[in-house]
Image (tube, rainbow, N blue to C red; front, side, top):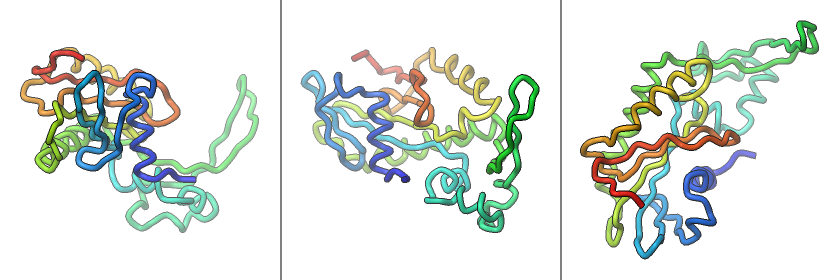
Length: 201
């Protein structure tokens, strides 16, 4: 069963802001959450990283992958060449065990993934003017990777690059912090980008 956007936002939020530490929240809109913590109110905006619409459909359209596995002609026209039904084999100790059908999705070059990440951040910065900032001290941004940013062999290189980049505060960042976290089911500390105006908790 696919999760709704609001459900996914809450899971993304809780991967960064644990319930025990941040119990007083209100799910809202623009920004997505208002948090009461240590006598202050702050906002948290949550967004998801997808390389393109094909990736979003791959993750979120109900039964899309199962339909393709049943019948390859169910691949949408715009996804042809990006998704492909393939037969994969599994072996143990060099001995073939079994084969099964799978959906193969092309991975994008590193520079394309990083450009998309930058585009997402810039779009969110632009949309900040629509936030309801009354009484909010600051807003933080969570970008939740849905498998494209850190996926595949290149994902480790991207993770290492972004981790190194995050060591220095960013000038003029309107969000106090930007958290970049991995997809559901994989627990890793998020990469955190800090504003040069960040003065801690």
